[in-house]
Image (cartoon, rainbow, N blue to C red; front, side, top):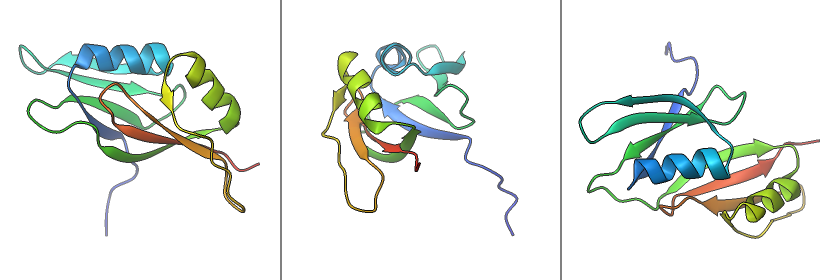
Length: 123
């Protein structure tokens, strides 16, 4: 049996940690949970949506590939309003999808092309 109790952090590969940090805090409104040097050129950076217990680690990609489909789904009370707000702040968002029996959702990409999804909480 497992002793795992929750998902704490999901790593996201980024080419430029400063640029990524600015995007997640300035464009998405995330808060910095941790920003600590782990070498002379790399930091361990965790950002978190307000009131969330799960964070994103902005991991220096080095030679690794960025622009991945993260599979990460964020929750919002109103997908249309969230999408409109992101659009106004200059975030590249896709169209709002509304399928029968499914919550409204859309996707967006960060400056490295990493894809995330935003899903409306059920009423």
